[in-house]
Image (tube, rainbow, N blue to C red; front, side, top):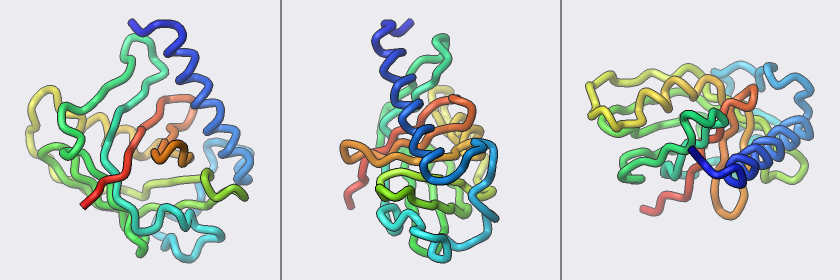
Length: 170
């Protein structure tokens, strides 16, 4: 079980991301940012800081005390590429996934709405400690992003958790 100070920090971060989400103009957290097939380049302010970026997974923060924070054994096995053409490519341990992504920045450009479109992925049987199925299950529920301290925080709807990514250098 995590110390209560860690739980409070995660909840504060989730609240900050939700506040940014609301500031981006989405009063209803269940509201979509638009059609998943819509190209990122056609959206207003379209998360320009995210276009053409690559990330690797640092951790999955759950708001459920029983789950806590999950970290990959090897961050390089979990990557996310946000291409300028609106395609998201993910490496998830022994699996891969591809789909669309859309973003709309808030006025600060460091936060806003974020939506993955449907992801098509491989279904290889990864080792039990793999986070591939967890990420694939949570991706449809990502609703907001926050760029903070050089990391990308993707917030799940209904205070469900946060996927934390760091820049992937090639």
